[in-house]
Amino acid sequence: MVEPHVFIFLGNDELRKSERLELLQKKLFPPDIKEFNYCLLYGDDKGLAPKDLKEALSCFPQAGALKRLVVIKMAHKLSKANQVCLQACLSEECQDKVCKTVVALDISANGGKASESFIGVLAKAGAQVERFAGEPAAANVFDLGRAIADRRPESALKILASLVRYKEKAEKIIGAIFWQWERLHTDRRITKENYKRGLRLISESDKRLKSSSSAFAREALILEALVVRLSSLT
Image (cartoon, rainbow, N blue to C red):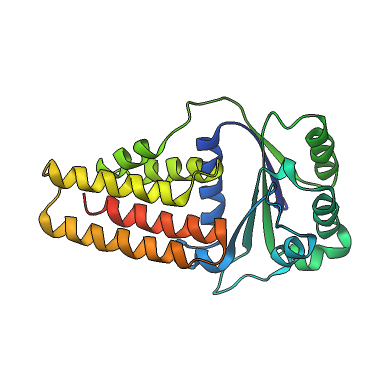
């Protein structure tokens, strides 16, 4: 059986989508080379041009990865030009380049008739549609802090993915993490040494976020690394 190279994640259950993406990533590359083989785009990003989309889909895997993974959140909001570009890149004429890239399109269940038409075209071209029904309660930045405090890195990463999905500001996320870290210290739930280590990690991550040139993808990776490292200190 030939594995599909295009997936459509349809629905509103963000946690299950996040879990599915994690499984997909594990098949394609180990975590330590994710930065070189993972690309996160947003369909409603006004700065996303067809040439940028084509470049993301045409890159080859790096550092020994089986394939690259390109995730397009809110794919139903891609401009018409970007939809045409995507369909062209996934067509038979471009298979040689794209076969080394797995594409995951994240589409809301409330995308409307336009998204239904878009999904239909891609499904006919071989995209695998996976449905994620449900409308779980939205997590917030304080839920993220609590997950870190409780040493639940997997839950923390899922909550972070949900926050990033709905474009919570990175400054707000890191601010909430800092607030929770201070509270842990006040409540004496972490050692003085680990408290200082955590402050350094938060400060370093904040500096990296402020100097980051690629908005969404880079910010997400910086925050993911911070969440995992802080969880190990609590």
